[in-house]
Image (cartoon, rainbow, N blue to C red; front, side, top):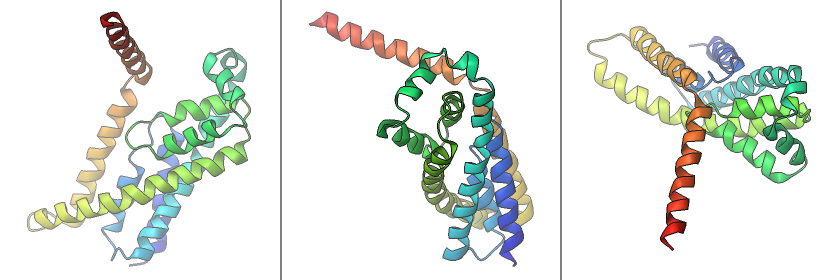
Length: 206
């Protein structure tokens, strides 16, 4: 099978899913599902990793532009002030890589919006985001491909490949939508308060 159309589709899906803030977590799943239609050689997997990472990185500029457009009100927030303070320091760029590579939680979009408001160099930001996204795709795509191949091997007698791909895609799209609907700031505040209470109780014990 010609891999070029599949890679183009993977790139498009990766870009579109990541262009919507807080909704880009399932793009490696879609890439893994498309690879089921090929003889997934090491070369094809490597190309899918690079293509999806590039698509995700470029699309994150949408969040950056959103932050840039809202820079006046956002510059008054403590988060953006901190980003400005750390703009030329290693901890910020380490955080960019970690959040770009972190599976499941779409927390990186908050950072990209903040970097846009802080007028951080977009070229430098894209370079570090690309590193994180390559790490993410390199870990997730081989694992997901193995899992989907194993699952399809079990279901193959009763279901066709195309049907299996559609069912899995719909399932993970629904999961991505659920993640999108979660109020991550509220969860963060609750965790912060709980950790504060635990720390306070421990201090009182002494």
